[in-house]
Length: 241
Image 1 (tube, rainbow, N blue to C red):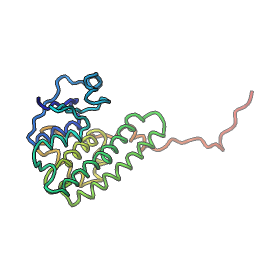
Image 2 (image 1 turned 60 degrees about the vertical axis):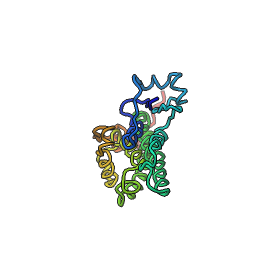
Image 3 (image 1 turned 90 degrees about the horizontal axis):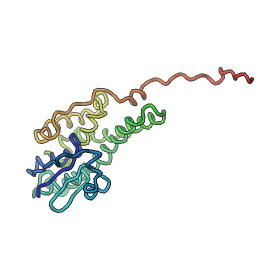
Image 4 (image 1 turned 90 degrees about the vertical axis):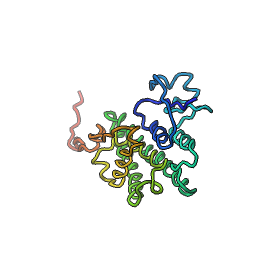
């Protein structure tokens, strides 16, 4: 039985497994006629992924959900895969940066994207939450930027699984919400990202990456000056009839 990946087109999380497969010489087939929000809620799919999480990899020994876990599995299919480093400490650092990417970068982007997408036009509270999410993400990007100031890759001197995961997570941000004005604050992250997405094995999977040009509606709302409010002292009480 071949490895079959269930995913929608353009899913950057699914790209983690596909890029890993390119580096590892592993063949993965894409499930045919997969339709997000439909196929992933069928009884058959829910047996593989209990909450309909995408992507899912079907293997001869059972199904796997969670994109990072799938990428790890694919990498392990090749003995002594250099994607996992050349020593125990490199292996630990690779796992460290993969977790950092998930818990700090991907999670931070998620907070920002979802507050921007669903908060606009409701209350000023959502705009404040959006601004907070941006500030939290910047802390993580500052840390990543500092590390990349003296490192071409996250671990060692060649591409590892950590780079694949980080690149795919950053790709989500670059294509959805992180404009040039925003990412220019992190020059080493920028150099790293554009280097990674133009590597042959990466570009073969994700294609040409286009950075989002315009800020979201909420970002624009956050930057706009607050509307003038009436001074309570100047307000006259209404006449009682």
